[in-house]
Length: 476
Image (cartoon, one colour):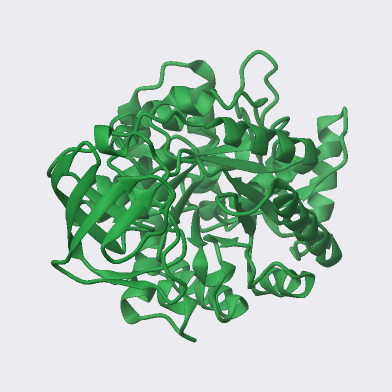
């Protein structure tokens, strides 16, 4: 079974009902709606189509709305693109006039005042990079240090510490309100710099509200990583912008560090940007891209994300199928023992003093070890909010993880959680009946056999938010 989840971006190439159903069949666990382009009505139409497709197939598919954040965007390049060659000189100005190979305009009034000589600027996901060589009151002079073809209206990446635009933006709040009214599962906040940026979105705590996904893509976010993780429901390693604020040689190490901290704190973590980039145009990825995806799995990613590959690519379904094949093979070679040992040591090093956290750590780690020792077919997590499931799967057990919750949105949130299969159960006042329901579903829905041993873990404490009960049982 594939344990690492797949997030696929929905765009012109994949937004039809037929394509959406095909993406779900291919292995899409979470559908991402980018909000940088298009209207609210267009985005909500995508949302409704995704919901309908998932319902048609009886699939648990989460939906992530990615808020655009304080994006600086260039004026349009010519229709056939503009060549920006290595070593070429380019002038940057503030405004929204047309862009060319000689002059690039950007819709940020503070561009000239905020950017200094020696700063790096980049287009899109960092494919084209410039260094500022001079400036005057009317613009910036820059040299192309990594060339390419300028197309459309790409984002202009300015060093994050220079930007004076706050996040979330007023437009983000309007977009978030529209999606929340529809019942969105997850909201991603772009260009987060502190825990305050995450909290300022002001949504109800999950699962009553959406899972808030903090995108780590700035130096400030890395500096404030612990607080951001604590304030978030999940995290995205947005490597495109992160690769502009840091040297490229630092990216693999940052990726490992961010993933490890997120998982240790029980937060799902998405690795994103250019994972199978060549599949935007080609029928298969490069060898380097396949290795990159596998290494993201070995690093402990909860999910890996496809962007242009599924939004505008030549064959979105093939891209998801390819991602599923690579991740499944990597999952089969994942070092569960070393990961469990490492996370246990990190949790001990974090020196939790809260009774509920200590109890949950002990019981969830024990559940993983007991499941392996008794040969359990599954770990059954009884959880209203999904907290118990995420506490278990941070240890990355070999044993199958099944999540049971009476909250439909909590179950959709678990579509992002590593190795988890989740289902909605009836609300019961009697915990014994709740467990019996789960055991029946383990047989009827998840294919376990009568007599199979399972580990059942749940929380019964009303005083503390703790997972405090562990049982070994048999499927009836």
